[in-house]
Length: 75
Image (cartoon, rainbow, N blue to C red; front, side):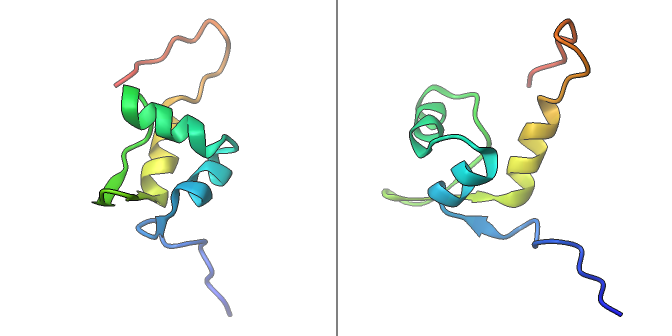
């Protein structure tokens, strides 16, 4: 019996992989990193950025709404 529960939430994704998971462009992720407001990221080095799956999922969960009038709470 297999208990496959999906990918490891601490697994690191590249910028391209994270963008694909969010269905956005890598350029959008870069803009969010510069301006703020995007998901948390890990700066491995000056040119190496990684995203944890759990951080991407938490970020999208905080933006989930039930209607257009649901303003939610932005952190």
